[in-house]
Structure formats: C-alpha cells, structure tokens
Image (cartoon, rainbow, N blue to C red; front, side, top):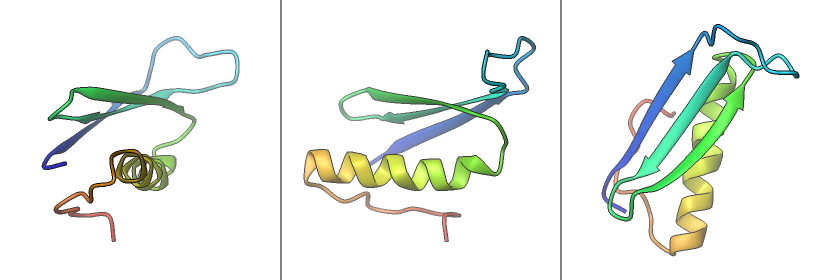
Length: 71
C-alpha cells in the first residue's frame, strides 16, 4: 500500500434519515479499493480514517508507508 487517498465531502444539501451531512471516501490507489462512510460531523473524520487504514492494513497484510497529519 503505497498511496491512500481521502476526500471529505460536505455539507451535503439533502440530509439522510439519520442526519448525516458529510461523506468520507478513502481509496487505496494500487487496487482502487474504495471505502465510503457517512459522517454527522467533521470531527468524526480523523478517527474514521484511522479505522479505515487499520482495516486496509489488516486485510492486505501491508502497512501504509506514511501517514501525515493523523497524530
């Protein structure tokens, strides 16, 4: 896993039933595997990205080479 790309989209103009207003998309570039999450606030993004990266590392058996701004 050399490159993981993230994008936080929001405020979504139409609320979901549960009040989600942001969408987080994480893509592992080498295999183009996307992971999508709906969020109720921007504050959820950091922990969600950490959880997605941990899941991708566990599934692939590889470590992300560099994570900046996650500390």
